[in-house]
Image (cartoon, rainbow, N blue to C red; front, top):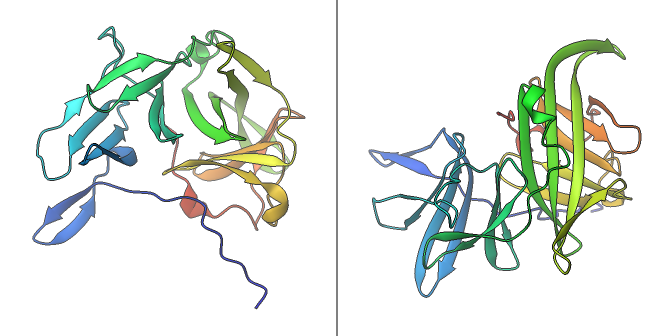
Length: 240
């Protein structure tokens, strides 16, 4: 009677129909169902970092690009305050106009860690909503491995930035307090750690080296997750 069930998020996926057997599309990273003016639209971010949109019941897919028509590769997608946003490898956030299928720049570029990803084997920027604001998590994983605390680990760098929408600038976040960010396979979420046993505050949870890792923003170190948290089905491998 003391067990609580809490809804973390709602998710969707794309499936192939093979003789009424539905199989998930393997190269799809995140899917968002969006309604606008009576149209039901599906926005899907693929593992090749292309963002495609289609109407339910239609066979045609459209690849979205930014308003200049140049950028068509994105790391993350999020539904924020009823609108769709994506982020590219430079940390620039774009607003998605679902009617015109145009991407409009919403934030300035973030040059703080632009030189790090050039020497890393894996890098990604992920969008997270917390306290009504948009955050970008920069995750960099080097190919170098080292031995610590009985585990073989990789060199990992994580930076967190908050978008100041009023002044149009990025704020470097060093402390999330009693909150952790979870970079999951279907959604990125912020959790108040006191509500989840075994979850540590001021940390970023992600998938690396076939296991879940936890990066502490205070001591700037990564370690394998504990045996109680989090649920492994929330994650999948991060690809560059």
